[in-house]
Length: 299
Length: 299
Image (cartoon, rainbow over all chains, first blue to last red; front, top):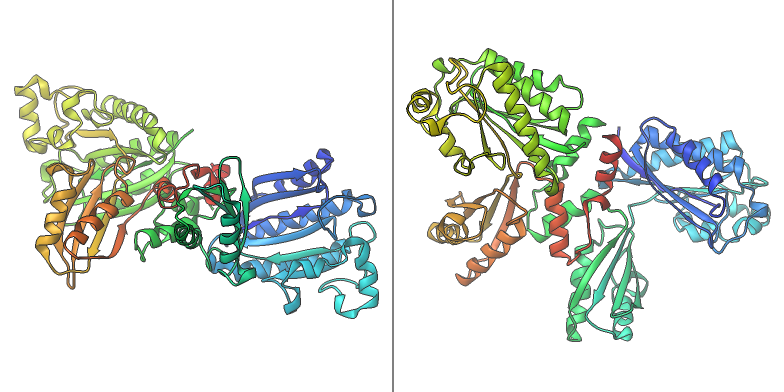
């Protein structure tokens, strides 16, 4: 059994009683650890984070999707965030970097159940994609709920990976995927020069030829500027990698790093890798972390 | 309830069936996670590492001591390591730096039970010491099992903290304490100059006026030299602190660090502090580590 995480996004961020019921359906599964929930009324969307051994997480994800399909009617939904389903995206995330294949298998199994038992067509994305062009979630969701029905009818290439080629009348379609943990990481500079932060962001982000798996923006805060990043795969580009890259480019302009900030949760392995790198301790492993050993004995 | 660790040392390292029985007595307590056991025949001594919520760890420690008192006869014991009891030392160790006072309370409670229910006198040491001069375990154990009976009779200052001022006839006396987690940490240099490793060890260790809570030796390995360290309180001097100190002194001699090595287990907080330091991420906390959150939900 493998410890994994699931971070489903549901298209409801304004009715707390609905989100409560979805979260309760997930948390009712024995072995599921509920870690976080966030609702955004402007997006009209909620993000739930839970973890556990993969069989429990798979069951929790399915029950959460089933509750969302029952409770959310997308024909009455509006919000700022793109969406195509009542349960819009269901990514499974390995906590250890070697466990991606388990998450891909779980995604495929849960996707088959969503289509077969709930009648909601499923698209597999990122590492779980069965077609290369579906790795990108934005391409899968193109047209959103309102446009997808027509797109499927018009273009066989838009047919779902599982289920009938027609969206569910009220619950749309669901994207089920597997991806590395995302780390939201910001670095503040000892400077108020927004152009500098923006230039560094451009230099380091993948889109403009920088570091792979890095998204970055330059922002102005109250008293300094910030390079705000998403690291979509810390195994490829880590916090220490972007820290060193930002520091080198800031220093070229005579500017130092003031501080950095990890937003939200990180897997322990990101810290283990940091120790290996910062201390040249190549042999260090997660199995040497006391709490990890305790967690292993409890699971 | 607080997650703590206990690392008792028992005066038996040659009869595996005896160690098995002691370990089984500890592990039988609900909520105890057995993390490690090591027996050293030359020392004729075994070290058991277990953890859990503090009530479970207290009960496990008491049952382990009770089994050792029943199974080990110090009048027939010989070994290279100094010892005064069948259960020789019983340190309780906080996993989070704010929890030392819990460990001191557990040490005092378990010590009172060992004296009251097992008739084994108890000395409190390190953070659990009730007399300043007993912080040092070596001072407490002075004379060992064979000399302690006479020392107590001769000198009232050697009377135990709990129990009658006379050693148990076969189980001696037990030192019960609270201390920070010990980190065993080695740094290899790109050099075969043993004198350099020894000079660096002297320069950084507390005994010779170096960094507080650091013990260090210079050693020759097959193909390089090593500064071998025990960090007795990483909250005072961390792995990154000694790494920087060793690197600076090695560079004065034109030598670089080849690699470093963490021996055995470290608490997660040591990695969290490393992240704060290496990434200038002062606001980062253990609560942001995914596995820590999962562990919290399971305890």
